[in-house]
Image (cartoon, rainbow, N blue to C red; front, side, top):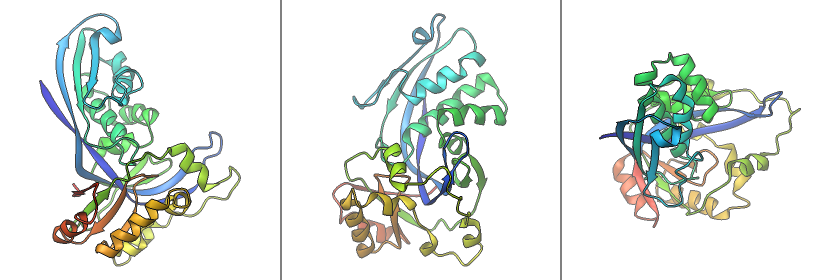
Length: 278
């Protein structure tokens, strides 16, 4: 039995630049930050011949999380099956700590963690593994790398960047999920709109300041979810230097310049935790 750690992420800054010709996918630029909030994936490797579902099984501590082909862990295994030994199987137990549908990338992280585990047998090169990852989800390639990454394209073109790490974040969970497709609809970006220019790299060349950070979804979503705006205001009031959504939400995070400040901030919320960049 082995236990793998599957970390969450924050989108420290996120700008939606336009739509990709042909398939209409949204183009963006963002800063992904891996954080220490994590799920656990326990794996018991077995020798088992037979059909896919006879060789691999998944259970989860959360009853609302699918354990069939709707789960990205199973999708990742299915995508890797052609490259695996015919008698390889596993019993997998997923313990969720990352809230689902909260903009923290839990499912994508689970998929990437699974891909890295399976690649010990598949031995695919990085390019091929990334090609598989992006078909599972736009965030999955980030979790293959982790750390701090500047992303463009649909979130799959990555380059490592350095930002100060002497901060903590308070994550506040409003207790609801926000549909990602619905959130993108609220941006009302047409297929023919001229894409905006990427600006994050030029901002980071200046003296670092959290005031440069933003998330385009904040303005688009708050009219329908006013409690998110209230949480942001409360985070600033309590001492956060930056507050915003992660991804399209619903998690709202507040950056605190010290863990002492974070401890004070988190005490002001009922459903919140402190996390750290890794």
